[in-house]
Image 1 (cartoon, rainbow, N blue to C red):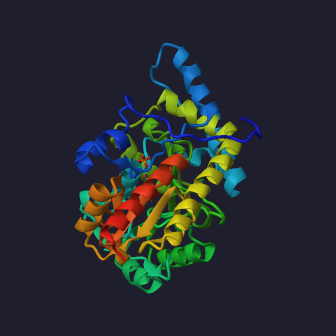
Image 2 (cartoon, rainbow, N blue to C red):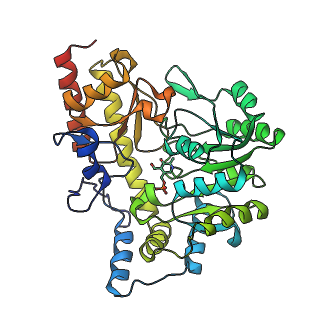
Image 3 (cartoon, protein in one colour):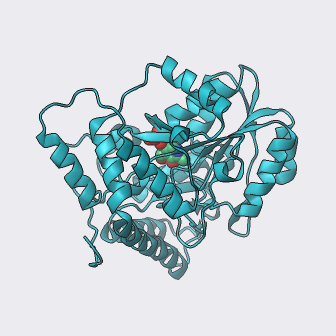
Amino acid sequence: MGERTMTFTAIDRSNTYAVKWEEWKSRFGTEDLLPLWVADMDLASPPTVQKAMIDRAKHPIYGYTIYPEVYYDAIYLWMKERFAWEVEREWIVPAYGVVSSIHFSIEALTQPGEGVIVQTPIYPPFMASVHKHRRKLLENRLLYREGKYGIDFEDFEAKAKEAKLFLLCSPHNPTGRVWDQEELDRMITICRENGVKIVSDEIHSDMVYEKQHHIMASLAPESTIFLNAPSKTFNVAGLNTSYAIIPDKRLRKAYLNKQRKAGLGDGNPFGIEALIAAYASAQSWLEELKKYLKNNISFVNEFIAYHKLAIIPVKTEATFLIWLDCRGLGMDDKALQAFFIKEARLGLNSGVSFGEAGSGFMRLNVGTSSEVVEEAMKRLFDAYKKREVR
Ligand SMILES: Cc1ncc(COP(=O)(O)O)c(C=O)c1O
């Protein structure tokens, strides 16, 4: 696509078994709804990614597939050029998905009953994975002050004394925070002092708007498992192709042991092609996409401010997800969800599904066309007016 201005449009996803468009009917109990929840986009993947997969599909054998050297090179260059992090070939561990890698990391680095810190509100599988492995969930609630989230370091330090592992989400879903280097350094110091290992889920690291994203494992290579994927950035989440980068040999061995025990080995031929094509040739597409998403985010912010809705959008420093503080509407979580579904006819994620710390909030996915975002705001406004909520 070169330097030409790109256009993004929402694509009809019917007959593609898309979770976002199929599952909502059962999940929200209605057909009449705009689904703006699960974190993928209604926008097409980069043309180069589409072409790589179409070319691969033309070869009619889709058998077991190795991870070729070009796959490792693509990851190496992506990390180096975008984040100034030079990784070694053997640090890269191809994986199935970031969530499954969180599970393997928990098994590798902790024993049942041991403490794992998560920073709530948080992407739900963080909490679920701790519970499923019968580890102790240590909730370090983020501080929310004047529309911005920050870390409660006093509490973090207290929790670190009981913890073996810290599951970091960076950038943070759902709050959209991009952690500053000072914040990361402070967390590292506390983890080091208490012998706490770190698993850093950085799946949203390409979707950072103005700030610089810092890779945790580049700051604490001896104790961090870095997890990443092209899934969110290039809208290829269904390919289940992700990777870990683990600089420390012992951590890598422990992680690999668990991943292999689960029987995971070879790659997905389409996922491999998509990753290589995306990292090698979709940089300018990504910059255009970010401009487009930023416009969607600005539109929501401006719309809510202009119409003086009693909703505060938290500043989105990263991701295509807007965390809406809806406490001003004065509804409990059930009523809030019902208001969005039944009155506004919008399917958002309920904030409380991100933990109690998300009570009173909703998460809005704007990874779609500006027309759909405008329609969503119109629906919200109409429902709001009807209620005359102040
Ligand atoms: C923070 C975070 N981690 C992981 C995932 C999912 O990763 P995967 O599909 O590779 O398991 C998501 C998807 O929303 C996410 O937001």
